[in-house]
Image (cartoon, rainbow, N blue to C red; front, side, top):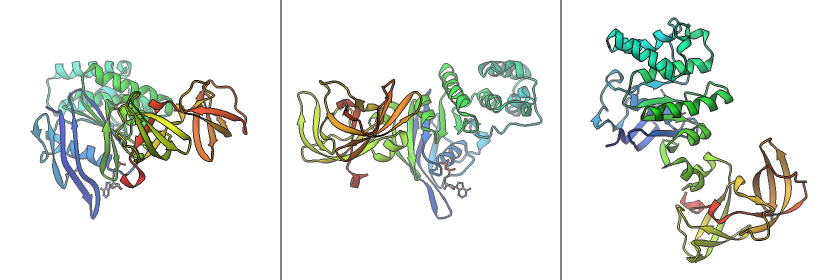
Length: 360
Ligand code: ADP
């Protein structure tokens, strides 16, 4: 049985549809992400699960019970908000206690839970500190502890890290994953930050315009996107139209006629399995492009370096491959000069096959 089941959820504001028949199932212990551009309906869906917004159609099933008509206080769905939503006049411990008191739990149990949650988020020494005397990162830890203390059926997180600076965000997202996994929590997590979703999520539902475009594990979505929107939203990529020339069953590849010349592409795990003569879109990510890979490389073609941008860990190259603009991202590579001729190659397993433009 799924911990959370969302069936056919639709919602409009006035005449504008925001969610269009969303189906989604979250397994117990799973960290499910809703990822998509601003305005695609992620927060609305999360709030419908919490009971803060009422759907126009569809059902929300939590732990096997239909909670669609229940008010938020009758659902066990604690939530962590982007702006923390802490009580400024209360100290850290009192903020965490607040929800437990409303539930009228025995004092001893409240004290034990607060102590435990402070420890989980590494804030034990700040128990008596007023929350407005804390940094943003510390406030977010308190907000997380407060939600964890309620021991919900599912933890809901709405852009919990977007008010933190980049370094702290990286740290906190790993910590959230660690805490959720150590405690076996089920969570539904909203973000527009692909790195957050890729690094923390067990699965990601990629949303656009109120629909789920693709739902899968991070690596699958990144390496084998089923559509161009998912491919672009999860990272930089070049796309090219290509015609399938033949299938080579002996090495599990399809051979395509492409702007880069003939390319062999592994068929393993591809959402599209092409037949000869089929026109497809191929996707190549910049970090998959090998520059000067050596004589034995498959899928090699000549390029001219048009631009080179040093970014520290990597260097971004813009390449001209017989008139096609291709991007490469190199790490620990020698300096390339504009106008240099190089040989590039794309390994057959690193190219994704997408449906042609008109099917998207
Ligand atoms: P996301 O979380 O993906 O950024 P939201 O779920 O917050 O998106 O919003 C989806 C769409 O619904 C947006 O276009 C937003 O402007 C609109 N919207 C959200 N809340 C309301 C509201 N209370 N009244 C009217 N429109 C709303």
